[in-house]
Image: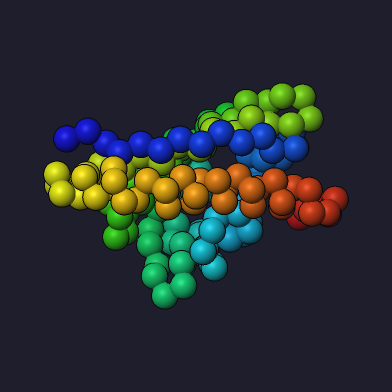
Length: 148
């Protein structure tokens, strides 16, 4: 069975180091991850680390499976949606950053694969677009964001 993949690219008006820091700071994840209300982590994110994310009443666990400062960050969901990975790839463009977000899911059955290909496509694309919009909003909202 082939994975279901969705990719979205964004331009974030901040240097690559700042965008990477924002993406990998557990305390800042609720600022840019749609529907996320809380992140519980034992410290700064690094490869192999697991952390819990609350989406309303649902809590799920993520594991950092790639961490290459400042160009790549990947997590795998270990909760309800096992088999899903989120890839964040960054490229510096001077004072801005090109960010590519890729959502990859390995469906457990042909029926799940078909459902994802037909009905879930727009919601995943919308979710990836929201991440990019929220990141841009966070970095442009005020100059104090990076002083934390």
